[in-house]
Length: 322
Image (cartoon, rainbow, N blue to C red; front, top):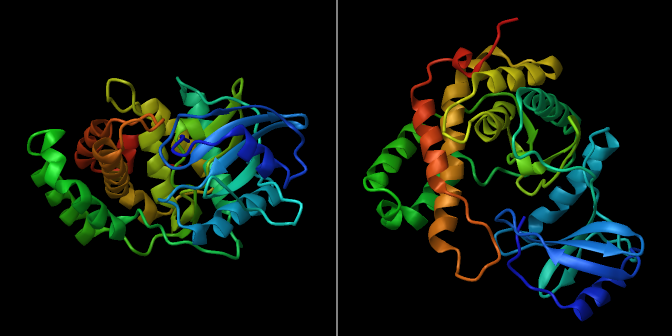
């Protein structure tokens, strides 16, 4: 979440009049994240999240995102729900941007997750994969292997500003992944961005998943390694095998991974690390001054990518054979 587009109280009041959401009491921008502009609203009817969809989001994808949340909730997954306007539509417009009101999910995200939390995340991810089956709409993952080269080309010329030699290293890595990327793994709806700030807990109990604006159709195992990258590395860059074991075990308690998926985990983990490195690199280099957004260090994911190059099997992530 982030704030790229400012809003005025008068414009917001007019926008809220299109909903049965009460009268505005207060609002504030949410600075975390890099994708859309988000605000926490308090009204006489409760708390809500207001999302303005920025230029990186294709308006044609919004029915997929909003519909998916309803589909998952109908199948028992705890996630926020878009509110309908008085005219029955889910989308409105505010400050020249498509905008939606989303229900507020109770809980907080964990700054220091432990293995027990990773197990809950693995289980919830598998439950989401199963709940997403049967969703009528589909969306290609624009940030999978076919999308990495165009993204890289936007930053390649300046990559060595971040670390000397980076341009050559990433060019070589990208070529390798393009030629070895698996195409036939089990697939369906994935979250594609299940970082700690997109998972809420109340105490040690997982209370729900949020931020489905990268959700798409892709390999389930790719979602798993994205979580390994996001949840199982420590601040010093080391991989925590106890957390990895817990996350994989939680996932497999709900949806066991097949042999092809297990064999592909190290390669998929490299690809996931490269994907987040590339988007962070672009934002690091290109985000305009003054934007209310917390830029994330691309080198964090470069270090993870280098770690995965050394991994030979899923057992090195903590996989326990059943």
